[in-house]
Image (cartoon, rainbow, N blue to C red):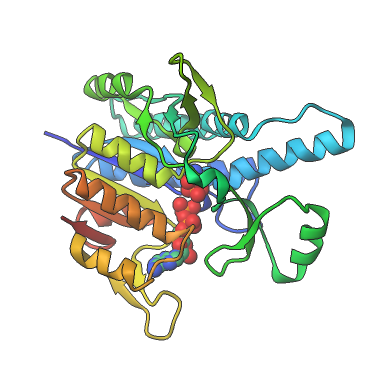
Length: 316
Ligand SMILES: Nc1ncnc2c1ncn2[C@@H]1O[C@H](COP(=O)(O)OP(=O)(O)O)[C@@H](O)[C@H]1O
Ligand SMILES: NC(=O)OP(=O)(O)O
């Protein structure tokens, strides 16, 4: 019987660098990702694909702000920008997966679920924005960006430049979880909780209402993986392995790690907040909720990683 994997694809890993950000570039990256995921499926996996949206949600928000400033167009709230990314990225993944299934004669189809995720309106994250979105700005540009956009909060993102940050509340409940379970059982290849899910709050009368934020897709993927009893949570990002002393002369790759060791490394500050740290915390949450295995690797290495040849493998 096939194993079930939740594969979380990073929003940054769909945009290889600052000069490859067009929709076409992203589709090419999605097609490469689809080839790797299909190769992995041929090794005996059913998958639910989740994806980030940090760069993309920031681009849509910025376009809206510029159009409002320049032409008086109505602004698009951040929550709607996030919903837009679920459709746009989901569409690309769904099409690329279906093309790949047809090419290889695999009798499967992909389907994207618009997914809402309940967060707590009182989450302290609303007072303390930490989720990087949109473009990277260099040190030289930062003063100009700050003076043009005095309300923005900007932080250094893992040494790759400065980025605007927004609130990122913790995901508490996946609204569409039952339909996701049913479609997995029916054998569909699902795209779900895109961009960490569309953040919604549950009001006193039980109704749902969108709220401006960007949920961390690794936390949402971990919640999903735990709730559907996935055999493995795979976090696909831009590095093949996780490292201790990342970027330093004594950098060391982690191949096989226990939950206990990983927690120790967190205490020793080996993982950058806003980039690797949330992935590590998501893995910890999954394993502490009963998950049996997690892998962190890059897209190109997925097939090799499930065969144990690369990637950082984490066990309870
Ligand atoms: N200890 C570490 N090991 C590996 N990568 C790290 C580490 N700390 C920070 N990083 C950075 O985290 C990045 C992945 O995070 P990010 O780009 O935000 O993810 P996503 O692919 O989800 O968009 C890597 O490309 C790397 O630059
Ligand atoms: N929503 C989210 O976590 O996106 P990234 O993976 O692009 O940061």
